[in-house]
Image 1 (cartoon, one colour):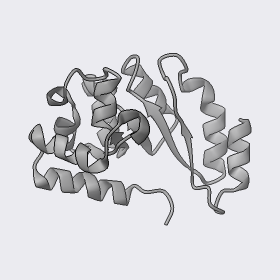
Image 2: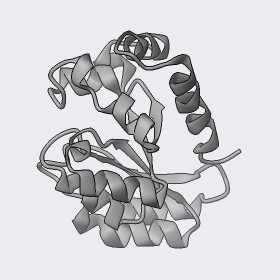
Image 3: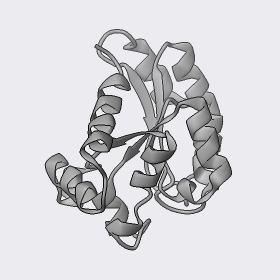
Image 4: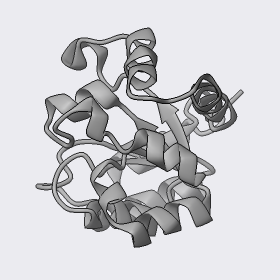
Length: 169
């Protein structure tokens, strides 16, 4: 709540969003509901780290906070009901293939759910996560997804989604 209140003071003056990031397996999102409500009331956009560790339910917890974007969502992609909800609600998944492999959310790039999610109509971006931790570049992430069969059109749609889903001007 303290962070949400501080962020609210700067809403519209450089602060455009509110995020919860970290190990969702050990620190679930649900207890932060009041902070998300306060941030939303201040006019901030909402995003949450979910679905890189733990169970698919972590993605559902983020969705229950009325977020616009979810960082990762990989593990949530294992549950068709959650994927349907993400698509229906128009939530953007910021997918980070190398980081997802390094943290063992996927065993290999060929098993990454990004191509299938895009083909199913889920709004996805291709991102790097923390470049210093993941040791990758955005160009490398796009190349990896091309190597596992994403078409130029699918890759372009991910880029267009990233632009359309940006917070702020």
